[in-house]
Length: 104
Image (cartoon, rainbow, N blue to C red; front, side, top):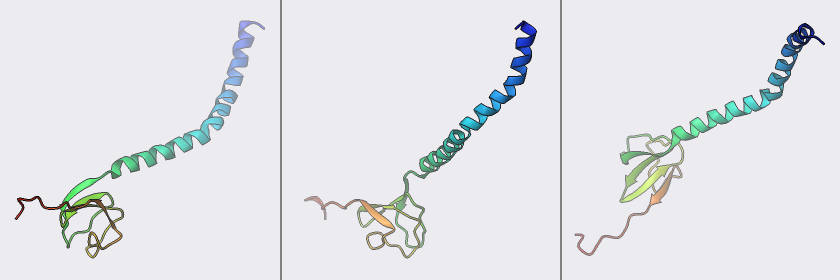
């Protein structure tokens, strides 16, 4: 084969090889894109301190509040009727400690 014939063969094979590679990696690309979306969603969640629990407020999943000396995290979106310590929407993170001997 001379150079011209080799160049012509490469020109004909290039689109076929390209399509083969695209088809072969397509499932991996789709899976990677889905994993990147999921990772971004998880990284955005995190814990967010929302202060002292307010009866009139709704909280998003991952919100951290304090109530009656304890810290709670919302494990799902809450409604104003979901009181920490009484509702399954909240999980206690830190239990209130005992008052010190000088507490009044």
